[in-house]
Image 1 (cartoon, rainbow, N blue to C red):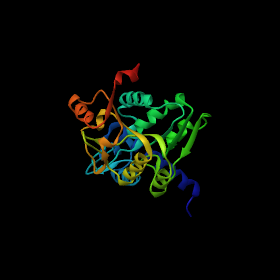
Image 2: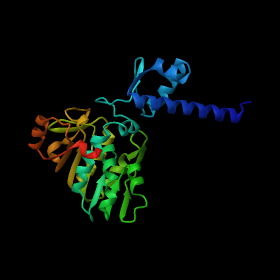
Image 3: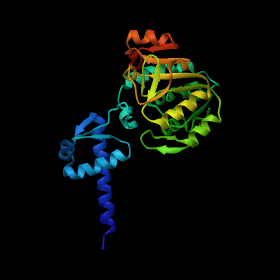
Length: 269
């Protein structure tokens, strides 16, 4: 007969090991299977089973002999990885984008890490009405008395820690707001992109619900493409980027929309 306590302990041990593996991959970006087996003290076959489970959750991406949390044109990185990269740039972009928000406005925020950085600045802009599909953005405003908070529900995505799908799109399409602020995973001088069609559909619905729209991008996402086209750069009223973006790209962007360049050093002061 199976011992329930032993089974529960084994499951906890497995989940702890998988969490450790995920943390190592997020920290290093790309690692080998053999290295993970060494640091976790289990067999290569056990690591392969753990990686299959983590890849199924969208936490990481497998390739022959290794695993990665880095984005590609068809794979968006897990939220935990994105939260730890280009932080000063995202904070600078958020600081510049906050200037677009005025007390009394209704604003819609997506589930990107750049917009999460912005959300942390917005209680100072209260009173506001905030609409979002991002769980962590909801946590920022929960308990803020002068913030009217509206959650845009749908199917929960572990990769993005947010709500997506048809119910979310329908909730968004029933709303009309003063300002929509989003980010995405890639852009060039003319077009914006994302790897996942469910995310594209939600972002498009958001952009269609705003009287004004703003795109927040750190320079690591520019001069890149991804599988799905989101919308032309010209569809945004404002694009906010950090000063790591090249002057030629900035000049091209300014042919299509208002561009605001955020000095990254401001976020470090």
